[in-house]
Length: 116
Image (cartoon, rainbow, N blue to C red; front, top):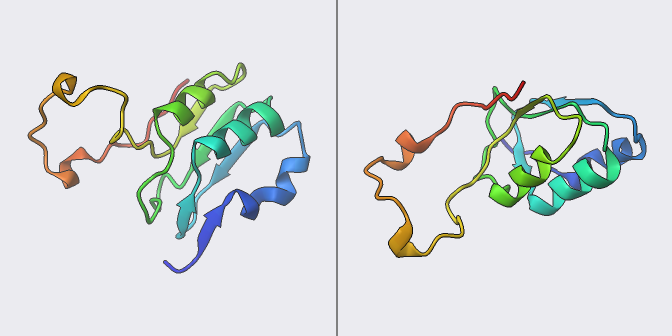
């Protein structure tokens, strides 16, 4: 997995404001973050109905999209389907209020989410 994918990879596509479906699945490292989600969803593709990133191949690196990026995506009024990796490691809860976990890192892997 030598290739890297970021917002600049898809920059030529961002000029099309009527994009309704974006599905990308390739063996590469994905470097999308909360700001990327804001740019894509609220500014460039406001009519987005489906947004799916590397649901089969995996991201190749830890996701930089946090709960903030997920909330941004969920505010998209036309959204009907999404699949992406979200990093909940740095959720905004004080340490003493976080639930205790007994899962190993490999057991914490979530399956792709689909909202319909």
